[in-house]
Each structure stands twice: as structure tokens, then as C-alpha cells.
Length: 243
Image (cartoon, rainbow, N blue to C red; front, side, top):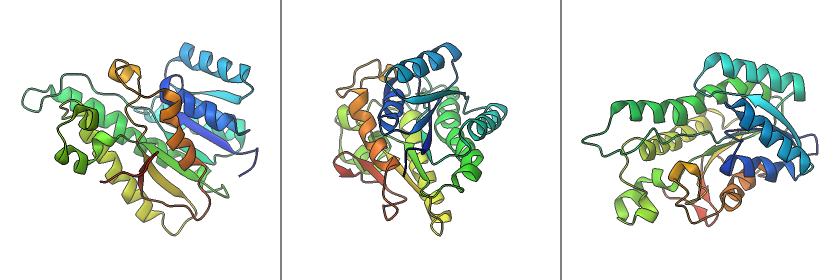
């Protein structure tokens, strides 16, 4: 990968997404800052540029076909192609999420953004990614999506709070990642899921114990994998996360 490498990070105006953009930008890459909110997106772009990053804003609502199609056109016009896609945008769907009392709208919202949105953006960006010499896709998942950890522990630091929307949406995303890897196994596209750990962000009311910069590290590692790197896996800083 060279200094002309272009990456798009969804949900990059704050938190982990912003730090992923900053980390990849520090490599000399051109970074598309995908975000719905115009003011926050442009503020993030300005901050990244002030730090020396070649950043550009990409208006992007992952739940909207028209918005995603426009984002593809913008990235192609601005950068001529795409090398790395980091699907970071996510929502909880709203709390509480006890299975017996949950508002079904919370489940729909979590799946629409965290799963269907990833599929929508990935499929739209694939024609650009296929042109790259070393395309990478990183899906930002969570350890709370690990069925092994959910069934082996009652520690909320491991499992997260009781959740029938957010946590299962990440399990769903992991399964989707595997299916992409299977379909794309005869291509040069590497796609993996990343667990950033329990990071202090507005998603969890800043209760996390890791910084956004720490949470971004695994995504940056998977975005910069060598051509013989893994695909269809689920990783955190310490290594493989059990399914």
C-alpha cells in the first residue's frame, strides 16, 4: 500500500471512527470521513486536516440507498477509487433491551444500521474496492457479539448489559462477515470483523475503560493487513475472538 491509498470510514466524525480515520491518515492515506451530521463531519475533517491528514467529508447515512449511492460517486470523483472500507457506523437501538419487554423498534433500528447498513455500503463500494491492488474491508463488531463469551460469563464487562438488539446485531454482523469472506475468497479482498474492546464513547454513556484511540488500533491493523493476511476472522488486540 502506498501514500495514494484511500480509505472510507463510516461514522468517522467522533469516537472510535474518528480515531480510525486519524490513525490511517497518519500513514499518509487519503481519508473519507463518512457521517450523517454535516456540522460534525466538517468539524472532524477540519481537525484531521489541521493534524496533517488528507481528509475529505463524505455525507453518508448508511440506512439510505440514495445517500450511499451519492457517497460512492463522491469517493470516485474525489479519489478515483477506494482501497479500504471501515464499516464503523453503529447505534444501540435504544435502551433498555430486556428480551421480554423490548420495544421491537429498537431491534429493527439496531439491525438496520449495524447489519443492513453494512451490507448496503459494502455492496455499493465493492466496484471501487475491486479496482484496488490490496482491498480491505473492516467491520467494526464487538466482543458482546461473541456467543461464546455471552454463554460463558455473567460479567457485564465481558457481555455488556442485557441486550436483545445491540449485542445480537453484532453477532449477526459477524455471521455476515463470514459469508462475504466465503464469496470473496477467490479475490484479493480481505474482510474481517474487529472488536475494539469496552471503549468510552457516547454509545455506552462513556462508561468504557479504553480510549477511542486504543479501540481504533485493531481496525487500523486489519486495514493494513499484508496480502497473505487472514480473512473471515474476528479479532481484538489480544488476537482471535471466539465466535
